[in-house]
Amino acid sequence: MTTILASATAPAFALRALDGKEYSLETFLKRGPVVAAFFKISCPVCQFTFPFLERLFRRYGGDGVTFVGISQDDARATKEFCKEYGVTFPVLIDESSYPVSNAYGLTNVPTVFLIDTDGTVKVSSVGFDKKDLETIAKGLAEHKKMAPAVLFRPDEFVPDNKPG
Image (cartoon, rainbow, N blue to C red; front, side, top):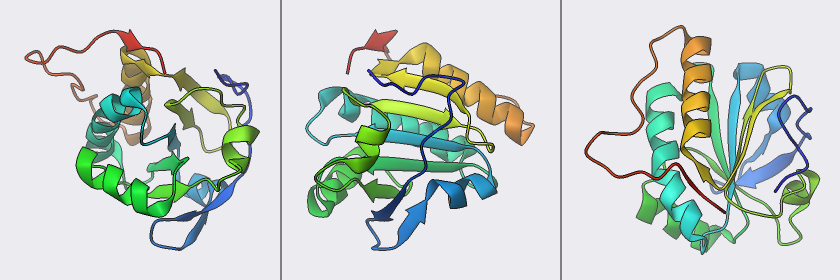
């Protein structure tokens, strides 16, 4: 669960990325909406969810939309996770005391937020939720003034949800 639900204001944060640079939510929001996905590398539902987030990133990332993973693990393990699950969007490291995860009131991962440019949370999703990911895709497509892409292929079995 999370204490940050849709229509709430997303807590500000600044964290270091795998490249060693510090990034902030404030800076990301100046470019457009942000998809922030919290995860732990040992979480099987995170492992299932992140390839779908990568699909969203490839379709809607860049040009005014930021995708960012927020890892609750160290940089070395997180780099291995990104390589194994094909994650190419930026990933930040939430320090061992999890200040950002705690600010967002997280008790489960993955937790994914779609945050609008004014800092308002548009989607707050815990675990894997097919409908929530489709809602994020629709919102990003509207923002970019493009047709929404099919996120889930007909030839793959994707459950409606998986608890985190």
